[in-house]
Structures are given as C-alpha cells and as structure tokens.
Image (cartoon, rainbow, N blue to C red; front, side, top):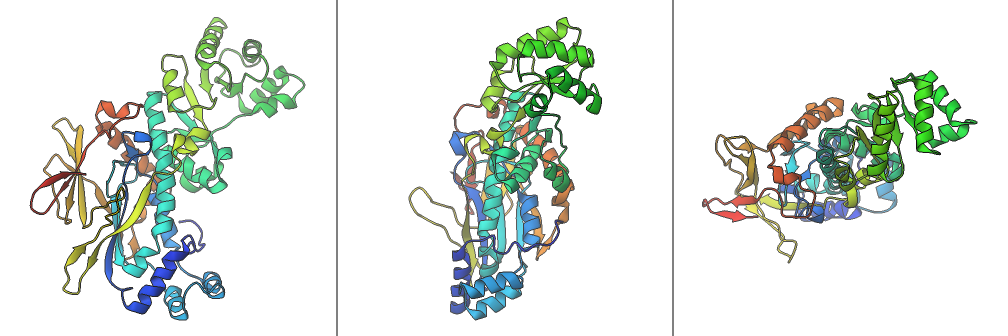
Amino acid sequence: MTPYLSTALLTDHYELTMVDAAMQDGTADRECVFELFARRLPNDRRYGVVAGIGRALELLARFQFEDAELEFLRENRVVSDATLEWLANYKFSGTIRGYREGEVYFPQSPLLEVRSIFAEGVILETMLLSVFNYDSAVASAAARMVSAADGRPLAEMGSRRTGERSAVSAARAAFIAGFSATSNLEAGRSWGVPTMGTAAHSWTLLHDNERDAFAAQVAALGVDTTLLVDTYDVPNAIRTAIEVAGTELGGVRLDSGDLPVLVREVREQLDDLGATNTKITVTNDLDEYAIASLAASPVDAFGVGTSVVTGSGAVASGMVYKLVARREGDGDWVPVAKASPGKRSVGGLKYPVRRRDERGVATGELISVGGLPVGDDDDRPLYVDYVVDGVIDEQYTGAAGVRAARAHCAEAMAELPRTARRLGKGEPALSTYYIHDDGSMELA
C-alpha cells in the first residue's frame, strides 16, 4: 500500500452536505446500493476496458478524515459539528463488488456495486468516478492501439502531455491494456510497470556532431541501445549509426516524417548495410489509426504519447454513480432509478454474466435485475468481491494486482468476436440484455 496520506477530501462539497442533511433527517443509516456504470461508449466505440480498481482500493484504504481535513471543514462551515464528529470516525464498512480490472464492458454494464449505509457510500462518488473515468478511458484507447499493433510492442511515453499524477495512472492503465512498457519511472516504482528510455534530440544537439552523440550513447548503454536518427538527416544518421555501433545495433527510432515511406527506406538501408536485426521504433504523434496505417510497414515497435494519455479523443469514459436500491424497514430492497430523458437508469440489484458460445467466444452480456444469478455453464460471472464488510482484498492492489489485471485483460479481449477490433464507429460489439424477475428479457 502507498504510504498513508488522507484521501478524504478527494470529494465534492455536495456529497458532504448530503451526509449532513441525512444525519439530520435520519436517513444517513439507511442501507443503500450505489452502482457505477456508463450509459454509452465514447465516440461510438465497440467496447471499453475497465481500469482503476486497484488504485481506487488503495485510495479507499486512506479515505479517513484526520485533524487537518476536519479543521478545513470546520473553518469553512461545510457541515455541522455533529457531522464533523461522525466524519472523525469514518471508515468504510460496507461491501464493494464489481467487474475485474481489465474486463471489457459495454453500455449499462454495472461495473461497480457499492453496498453500505447512505452516508458511507455517497461520499465515495467523486473519488471512484475520477479514477474509473480516467483510467478506463486510457485503457480503452490503449487496447485499441494494442489491437492495431497486431502483436508488435508498444511503449507508453505521454507523461509530458498530462498532469503529473495522471501520467502515473495512464502508464498503469496502458500496461493493463497490453502496452509493454512506460517511460514513467514513478509508474515503475509504484505499480511495477516495466520502464524504458534512451535519449532525446537534446542528447544529439548537446554534442559537436551526431557521430560523437551516437558513440557516447553506445559507450554508456551498449550496442543494444536504440539511437534516435532523425535529428538532422536520416540516411546520413543511419550510416553513422552502423559505423559507430556495428551491424548488431539494437534499434533506431524515428520521431518525424512520412512514416510509411520513411520506415520502408530505413529498413532497406539497414538491410543493405548488414544490420538486418536492427529494430525500427516509431514515435511520431501516433494513435490507433496511425498504427493501423503502418500495418504493412516494417515497424518493429511503437511509442505512443499524447493520444494514449488523453484517451485518444475521449479523456473521460462518461461513467456515472447512481443510487439504484434502498432497503426498507421490512428488510426488502426497493429499486430506485433516475427517469430523466436521455439519462434513464435501471434500478435494482444486478448480477451480470458474459454469455459465450461453445467455442468460448463472447456473444452477449446478461444482467439480472434483482440480483439473482443467471446464465448457464458456458456463461462467465463478471462480479468479484473487492471489499467485504470494510475489509479490502489486497490481491487486487499493488504491482501484483496490476499484473493480474493485465492477464485478465488479455483473456477478456481474446473472448471478443473479431468484429470488436474494428476501429471505425459502430454499435457495441456485444448486446446487453436485462433479465427481469418474471423471466422477461429487455435490450439495455
């Protein structure tokens, strides 16, 4: 776990005023179920990838109001003294279950269920949404890039294109979705993501000439290093690189130019010089479409920056956190739902499964409304328990949790039909159906 630092103020003002009012009218202790889900997929994509649960659990472990947080609330008169006293003893004691990190999701997928008293659950809304909305946006974009790369490795290198903490989260999410490494060292330390990096154009410009720069890099890092060859003139740089490092040079990197043409020319020149095993990495403002356009080019690896850390045009996933059920005095659960046009939600406890055919290919998503298990032997239940009676299952946290999420993402992606990998806009790859208590089925 990360060293202790309170996360209790990673929330919105109105969440605490709701708690304050609920304390006063006696509804704070009413048992409730909150659900985190997305009504639609950004940009008419065909699937999304869930990411962030490991981060959210670590933030939850530190979601307690210490003296500094309580003093801020007191000075700014955010809540009453009675509520301040309650917050001073706050520790989430409810239960959280949801989709595995790395799972694919679709519109209305009930990604996370938080069951607790109202006061405990409502103040987690902003923290959970801020994590899931960003991390899932990055993972969803990254997964599309991984598909477009078709087995060729990708490195995340977008730290300079987002906030300093978002950079760490983005590296983590991209790795879960299948990226091979990151340039961000904090992501390596915090989450066990492999790190990589050699030199920028400033290294070449530092030296009197390109030959000196290449020679110094090879002397420091060995012939397995990757040399950046587009600072001046690419053909001249390629010749110099092989003269300096020999034909066993590990790789060259291209960060500009007409890549489909340039990559082919560089490959031909390397082969003519005898450097047939020298790899070519490209890193020029790539996104999934640019990567797909290089499918027939002799590119060996990709480095992606801005596009992956900004969700490739969808920096947030559009997820919401809604109250879907409350328990009455007789012990029965009462479904509740928002009915606003365009923002309709479905109330009630949920139980989702992934329907698969006899070959293991996913064919749909079934969600029972009422919380009772549905499905047959070929269907895969989607919920796992993350927190039970306030106790966090730590197998989903830290570097081990990241590795498990990465493995699960690969398995979940492999289940999808081939049509899911199309990059163009379209309908979700799988249809989602609600199954009601009377056995009726409804398209979500």
